[in-house]
Image (cartoon, rainbow, N blue to C red; front, side, top):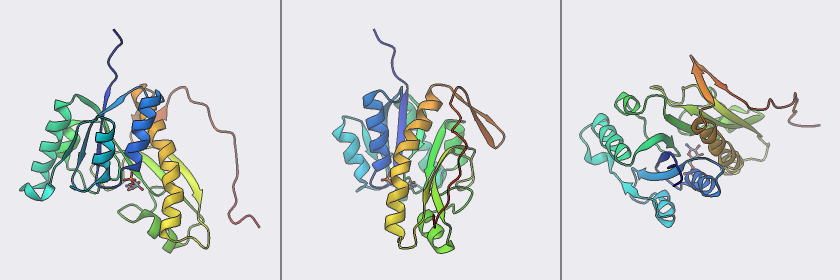
Length: 219
Ligand code: GRF
């Protein structure tokens, strides 16, 4: 008998394209785990459909029907535990998570954010980057802590911001990179290659990228 693959839980609020990238990576064997449960706090989250298309249990839980954030988080944690979740991935989950949830999965919750943290935390990463006028933005996978987009950084990818970008074109360019680095970060976590020391995450056995420099614009 083959050894069971660790269970990944994914929390979504919307389209779930990151969820899809994680499911695809698990189905091709690119990550050594399987998505075992998906929870959404929006009834119409397309992520629920994506999960069910792959035979993955998917549950809608309306946060408005709970008396507190903590009560909602406790119920989500209970569901994830019942499915044996070993890693929780927030993928476009538009809710701040309370310590009740973090205590249920200490050091085992990842999030993806569409900006190069610590720049532009919050709900409008691409819009804020565009308005500020940065020449590069990107995305960040980080461990979740009690702050908003403040936890130790596992991986980042950079994209250029062009002068004719709008929020949609920039967000789409960033999203493509999200789909690359989120599965990679999950693989490193499940392979036991990540160590957190304070704010810093150290990664065992990975190649260092060659020294490089990038300019934008490239006049
Ligand atoms: C992504 O840009 C993610 O970084 C942000 O919300 C978006 C979710 O996209 N938190 P999807 O639902 O994975 O398609």
